[in-house]
Length: 421
Image (tube, rainbow, N blue to C red; front, side, top):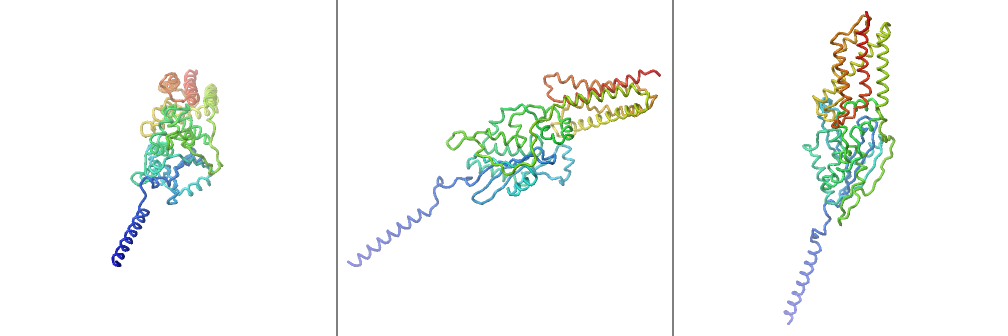
């Protein structure tokens, strides 16, 4: 009987041991896929927006996508606004409209410290992306960081730091941004925003305004208007995305001011430039005609010749620049610029005549009179274009400034030509 009992005891021990091993295996085995943390659940995504800076290329502000990983402890800011003045042929490529920018990823703390030191305000918007969308966004940004993918052709209105950030977010959201922003419009244009943001640098603002063609005067939907980082920040507040249960929730969960501004964004658009430009144009035209009537005095002749030379030189050189922007570069926002009718390269052909106008016995030739008449008529054509329904370029300030000058110079030539003697 004892050997039988021993065998029974051993059998029971083996059964208990097998049960314990099975229980241990069940506890140690990986959890089913449904019970594991979803990819991207450790990530958090937010949009960082930086206010305008003091340098002209900082006037439009900046933004970046911030991704924090609770699992690894990383905190990275991805931004698309990197360029290098030291790059080969940078200035030539800039002039030709072939600028190359790239994406970069930096430690967020370093970026925040840099922009705060520059006196620029910083706002962070936490975004309600699903774990899968967060993971897809980071995967895309990391793919974009590869050397073969990092560079892109820059355009200040359609492919800048803000539009690339917008597009990356829209990609992760499955087109939800585009769907909600493509139709509404504030009625503003590229020109209006460029003038507003460049307002602190008056000379640069005027130079940009005169160089912009009709593409800059298209009324923008919110989608295109988000080329300004501060406007993208505002528009995201209005976007709704589906929650886990399908109900719409705000894309922006909450906002945090990370740095207070030392430099303020221009809140208002510049005043209507038609009136100051018109007053200046009429005043200069009246002065030219008054000097032409007093050609008997050497001082009046000298002042008239100087003003005529300066006007012809500025208009002629300005016209060459506008023609070059249209014909020789890829700055599409400067193409088909009607200001070529006002800043006319033909004015350069009158420089010898205006130089000789300082002499008391000078008379304009028939060629000079015909050139001046052609220039004045072309300037008048710029005004006539305004009545055409398909003409959208807003160049009224430049018409108000330059049209009176061209006609004043033509009338002065005719007065001099008709003078007895």
